[in-house]
Image (cartoon, rainbow over all chains, first blue to last red):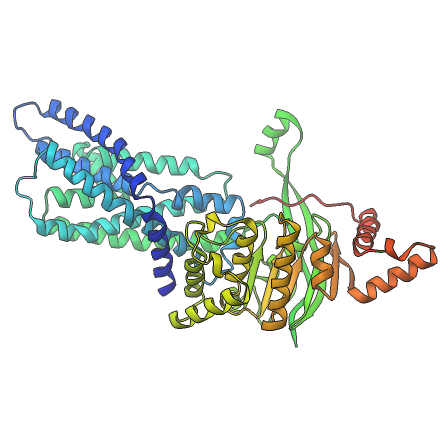
Length: 263
Length: 289
């Protein structure tokens, strides 16, 4: 465990140097949320009605939180770097070290998002308070309770993205699979909450890992309930266990197929 | 005691083949053709503990594939290998604690961190207690004169300083065997010389067994007393440097050549040429799955 803590610390040390660049990257976030605010203002109008059970404020904050997760975890470590390591054979020079490659990459990813995500959360929080206002009925306890759900959510996201990258052991390119996963994450969990989709589709979407990555943490922050909290935590435990199972299976099978350039 | 034992070691790669042009590309999608390349073909050798061995050969001869099998990166198709009595196939993790590897063309250091932070990182990776890491870093920094750039980020170091740090990082856990794959590639003569001195000191002061592959005759001549030449995946020569030179000197003397004409480079070139007639260079296997 200590070695992974050191990997984590090294990544944090490395990425602390990029704090300013990460903050500059917030501009894209700002533009997207700015458009979303105007879009939802138009859709809600002045009536104060609910859409899919969400007030206008809840809906905008939901989108802001899911976009924080999207932007805050947007690193190439579990995607391009891992797939690249396999394709160009770099993985060969890492698997002869006394650590597990998949856990090493996941730890690097954790170090990266643990710098990016708080920066985005702080900036987005300020932006939300200024442009949307605080959530009515929001309890700070919900934030504390939702924290482990958010950490589990981004971890599950990393596990699934890395598993997709490990497909590179068998295919020339895992990017199309990564693209598909990203788009599902964006449409099903990020831009709209689950309740916006037709009722017959909702149970199907609930069965995807996306339910536990974006929807879960955001839903708990905008509309906390104990039942929902337990349901999402259980789903996350299940998806994390399954995801890690798939990850280790793919890694153990794939590494035996490794052919590395002789020169 | 032998540090390395390889018996009838073989490795075959399957490499995709494609006929020329668009038709060939389409055909390869539906009916991929695979060609088998025997990268290493039943090689056997042993290396004694504390020995410095040059394991050389032309491009595509099977040198790096052999190193990768010895370090547990690749699994041999046939044969047996033991490094310090450990089977790399079955106990790669255990072996990792006993060996160090430097691949001249691959960076293992974190470029945004300083050498000091990198050494601490590698120390933790090899489960060395924090108090021992500090002592070890001080020892290595003194031995290899790293003090002046120990706290400079790796990205700001010269290539020579970086390679010195790469080698030092691979020694942090006191490996008993060090595998060096072209450690002086791309370095200027002065830096090459300092790297060679570092390897020599490592061998004499730390008694580390060194398994070296290099295309640089200077590395081989100045560091190793024994040489193994491979070609076409097979060992074509396994001899002491001294015997190899005297043998060729004697032969050239018969051909009335001047002794100054008989250099290690000319000997190796002659062996490569003679062997290439028997083993035309095999295409290098790519990353195929």
